[in-house]
Amino acid sequence: MFDKSLVGRRSETITRSWSSKDALLYALAVGAGQDRPLEELEFTTENTEGRPQKVLPTFANVALSGDGVPLPDGVDFSKNGGFNPAPASGRHSHVSEL
Image 1 (cartoon, rainbow, N blue to C red):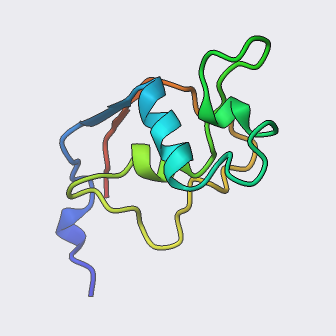
Image 2 (cartoon, rainbow, N blue to C red; image 1 turned 180 degrees about the vertical axis):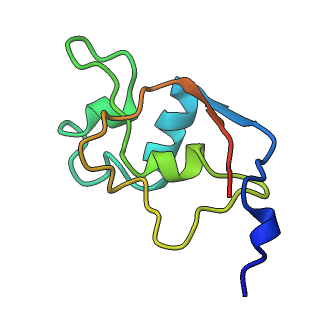
């Protein structure tokens, strides 16, 4: 049963940040570039001329979650629909409210 007295309560602001290196290491850890290294340079390097770094969509699951802040059931940021791709480095602040 849901305790209605909890409605309106807010969490503390949680800020997460990541660097270009974090996104690159994630891509390598999940196997980007192993089967088709030349086709996936955007995910595994940051200095290939004419190919700016891109971030795997599933990286958001790692970058935006962390200690004590699990994703709710059914939430998968890799299926981000019409959202823009994640930047190679960035910062995100999050507040939850019931």
